[in-house]
Length: 144
Image (cartoon, rainbow, N blue to C red; front, side, top):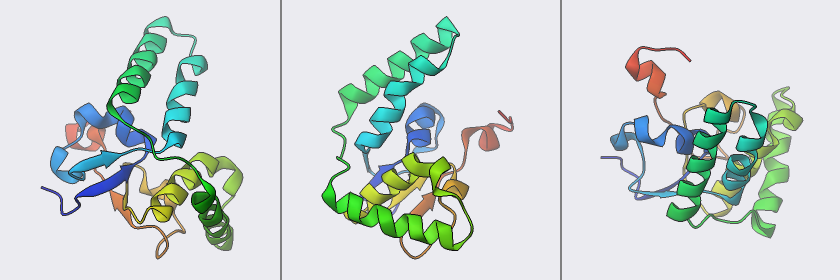
């Protein structure tokens, strides 16, 4: 069992949730409104009808299961500091706006941020309490 009672999970955690080792996750999972926005956009980003249905189903299940934390004024204040941190390590904030907004929500609420893609948050050490979760394909022995 994880040492965290609560934690914000990023969009990749939500996408892979059924395949993740529960012991790597917080006891209570929280999501941000940014994750819901990313999931809402997902069905419109594929031409494959089967994939579209899967993405819609994930969105509906997520909407039913979670009350997302908002990207509010406090999160917006932290966002600027996170952008400055990644610019300082020569990374471009434009390509990772959603990740930075999710991280801002975590910081604003004093929550650890769980992700299967820790590299998405490189440069934020000391600001974001990042918890890396093993990717399902790494555990299953498959690369996707």
